[in-house]
Image (cartoon, rainbow, N blue to C red; front, side, top):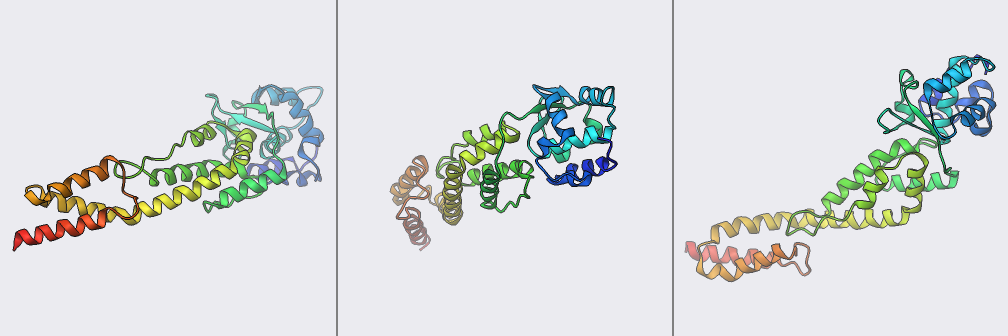
Length: 268
């Protein structure tokens, strides 16, 4: 703990560096580093940063604050502990400012994420174009889930579009934090990959057919008073009520053609 490199350990870990302990000449498992191991034991079921600092800065430890803060930050990045603000909201390791450490609540993670599992989670992120650095997967979870929800919104909506996909499972993952969140993403990765493909396909098909629906609606407004348009208007209403925008064969194109012809006949 007396090593002069602990300030650098903190700086590197605060940026998300998984190898921050190299600054004090340590390259093993962070949880087995003597300083980190002692802090991990002290955190146990949960302890405020101020209490952790007080414990290790006083006798018999007498550690410098750089060592305490550096150890905490390393353990956060390694996924061994998690931090919460005063309202119980999870804190991203890279967003935890040093001045906020004292007020933050630290808890030991009940589960650990293996290197193989982290690789699979990063591959999942890549499906939506999100590149996560090794050891920094948790920081990429919020943007990944946000993109997933936006994708779901584009895959459905108000009639005649199909109903928006159920995103309850995504919301459930959003409420998690730390390793629990990463493990859930790992365990549900196949399901999420299928959802991404399905929702992307739906969104693409909706985008292609939506202009035709908008044109059909405009033609309908012009044809409201035409006697011969009643049957067509009823069909349009059915498409909307039964959310048939994406039906095959396309039910919209022939109705556009029929309404266009009716309106032309009326003008002539």
